[in-house]
Image 1: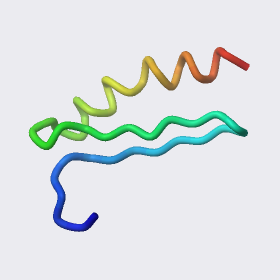
Image 2: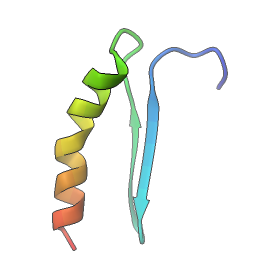
Image 3: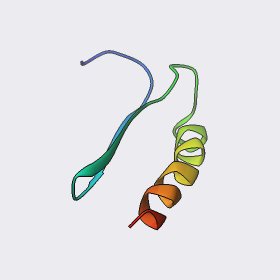
Image 4: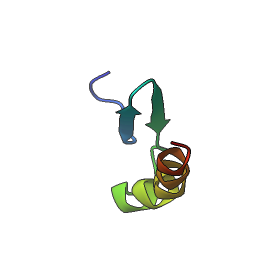
Length: 46
């Protein structure tokens, strides 16, 4: 939704995906840093 604060990142690989909503007061870097371990686990699950 336009005007909402906080990043929203969506990743999909095949039938598996992550839909990640960051806190409004988090920087993009902090959000991505929190998401990277989850993406790593997703990639290792194959």
